[in-house]
Image (cartoon, rainbow, N blue to C red; front, side, top):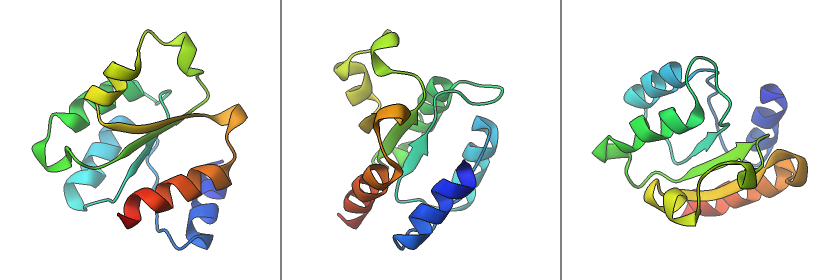
Length: 113
């Protein structure tokens, strides 16, 4: 699926890199500045929440918008809008109810600001 997402973003003029682990994502972020992060909460080795906590601990990344695009419905998590706001999450998208086009369009608007 990641290849399909990457293709959709590329067609919209947005270059993306993909990481399947939180550790690799942090390493990638250390090497290059990104306009946004799209996060699945179900990551190998560490959860997306653990990634988000580490990601937000770096001042350089404090303003980078994060979009959660997950197979986990938000209502099943013990979080609320204040928690997401504290992590500067720009949006939570549940995969079964969100098209890739909707996600691409939202990210495109966010990174153009």
